[in-house]
Image (tube, rainbow, N blue to C red; front, side, top):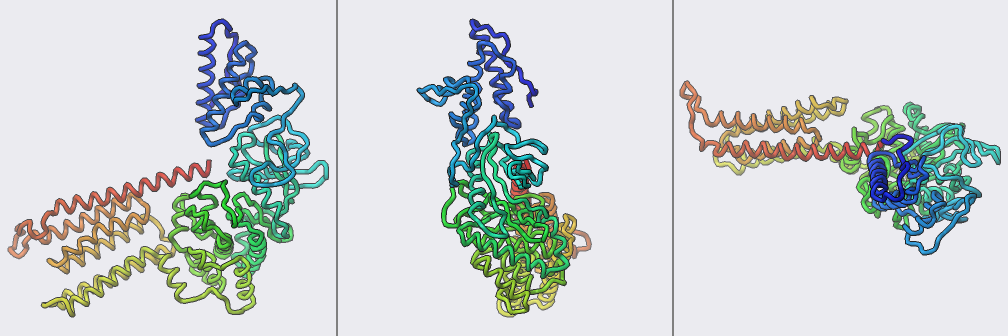
Length: 613
């Protein structure tokens, strides 16, 4: 970080061109280093105290450098922006932008750019301001004046914007002011997204959607004002609905009607979550923050194809996977279902330590049924909630209105449209992939064992048959036991290690009983190593690999040693040939799976840091 008063160029001799060039180069290096390592520096700070003849050269080099750095980040700096900041260097600015005409500014003149428009659209600025003071790079603080608004306190702050409680000094009323955090340093994409939020909200007139009062730009900050909702957000009231699930259902009905109104206007909110639901003093919900909303009938260019935007714990699978073309009103139905789930259970459907793990949960796992967390919940409300959270959009309610209608029927004790045995079975198979895969595999092996005993074997061994089936039953029982431990909150690495140990013991016992017939089933060891990667714990992968090698060595020693002679005697390597190659393959399998898990966790942590930055 640089000092607050960066070193300028003092007393440079105009005749000493080399010395001047060196000084300019040093300042530009410090400026670029500050740009790349922390908050963006201001050119103006590097000119303080320098009134020498090389000032013009320094201004030219710094502006050129900043333009290059901004363009490298896909920004589009404009000539008018720099004319506003450096009115005394209009010729320099014009030359850098390739302008042949000199644009002069008088000392008391202020350029307002971009020009204010009277209408709102996706590509133009918004608002109507009569004057604009100099640009600033940081948002104002509590107690400051912001145009005609006196900022009383900060209400909320997100990744892109900040919301203040403010007093309109002209109309003498309190409002909420939302402004873009990065101010004059905001990229074109950020400014366009902010304008679009204002446009969408301004076009929605519904009692449960926060209305927009005014849109404009002040001190380089795009802003809009909204009605002040003083009851806080739904986040602060989630716990109060746990004891009254029917009240939660009634709240979702109100929200669903409002969202259906927005969907009917052609807009999809895309970021429904408790913090974006404001509650007034009478407990009436108000939907806000249309920053990620998009028109369902158009392809917005504000988000790159494949980009993931939203809050992972509440994102629909099509949104989490970046499939923007699949976003539809069903995406908002999922968001409503996620809110409903949290109201019923006290937690969102998915919440993992990192953003990427949460996204994977949303894509491939089913949420724990609410009644398993709170058995007293009505079964009908659970069914409605889970139907909203279906992975495929076509399996959810076709619209928020259909959701509201089904909730009303449920609250009135009528038959609903969200139940079905097949639907429940499908949810269970997606919710418990570890259990389903193990039970399906064990069931297949059991059936093949029966077939081989009754049909495929010319000399069946009844004792071995019973032992194999017993081990398979024991294995299935252990699987259900560990699944129950996970369900009851025993979701820890020691429990996972016990589960892996149980799997390896059962597999080794099975191969021991089959004796010389087990060679094809040795594939079970690498499969167990690969399956351990689903827990995304590098240590557990290596633990499972060690167990697999130990289990195989146990079988190898048992097969290679002749214990019938009274003293151990080695029979020969032909019993289990090439054991060293097989052990090396097991170790290599563990290495590959562990590396994949480690890479996933590193990438996950990287994006978590970027999200929280």
